[in-house]
Length: 159
Image 1 (cartoon, rainbow, N blue to C red):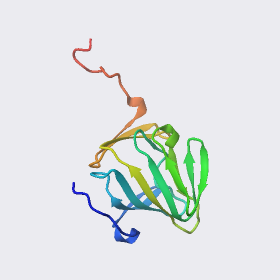
Image 2: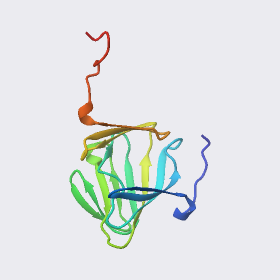
Image 3: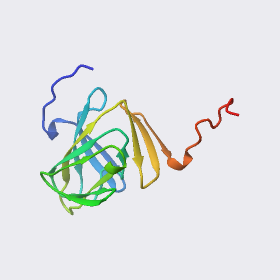
Image 4: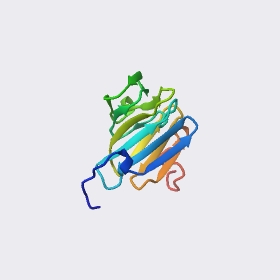
């Protein structure tokens, strides 16, 4: 993929809306994951909603730069209040587990989401006991952690 300079404000990028119960957000992708070392998006969460369930990545670092609004980020160590001008960085692994929620009753929470990328991402959801495999092309496979089987299970020559 040919690399090129990307420049613009949030309004220059087409929004993608997600709404599933308590999980509602608008995402404006600046640089897609495929073909880039850094995935950048403008995010907006409406009042009293969260963008995503509690999760962490095995090999990706995420950083949020808060533009406007207020919220809380639930982490593996507790909740952190966040507001304009702040940045929070989530390392790979369980220490980087997070879920951001807009705590306002009337204002959106807006932030820039910066993620390192790799061709395959493994995402864990500790609240629901699920794991997902996501490819840079967007394919997703999700399974419950309790459904795991032995490496040799079902192999004809395994004995």
